[in-house]
Image 1 (cartoon, one colour):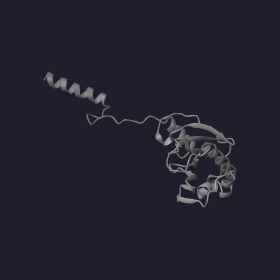
Image 2: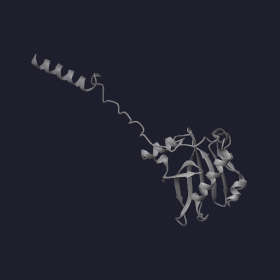
Image 3: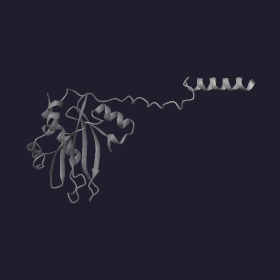
Image 4: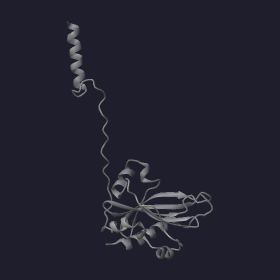
Length: 195
């Protein structure tokens, strides 16, 4: 009889330790909340609707020529990108419809060490707007910086991704300053998308 009493006591203790769920299995693992991050303020929203309607509105071929790049015609590889490509150099704008879709999500991904934040992190300000250089690619032949991607905060729910570079094109050669060029692209996009 003592043995049954000890068994009942052991079961009651185990039920208390498992949250009164009996012996049904381990407790679920809860994900910690996203870290609190400080995100720079966007001074005034840009026209995200205009950009989302046509990603090529971020800059025109004439503006690209003004930056020293002969763009040719744009190509929409899908509804998320607008790309100009000529002689191995790629210039483009994209909208990340998957997380991180805005600067807050990008900062949280970076704080948690997620690869979605990119391989580089350099906070910059372009014409008063917060931006982050999130990706730097090396030219395959020279191993110098061959491409640069920047995330521009356009409003609270949207980040515009701009890129300029050779992006793995053999023989295209290194570009003088892809990150400087992508910052100039961001200035053009800000001017075109101001409300």
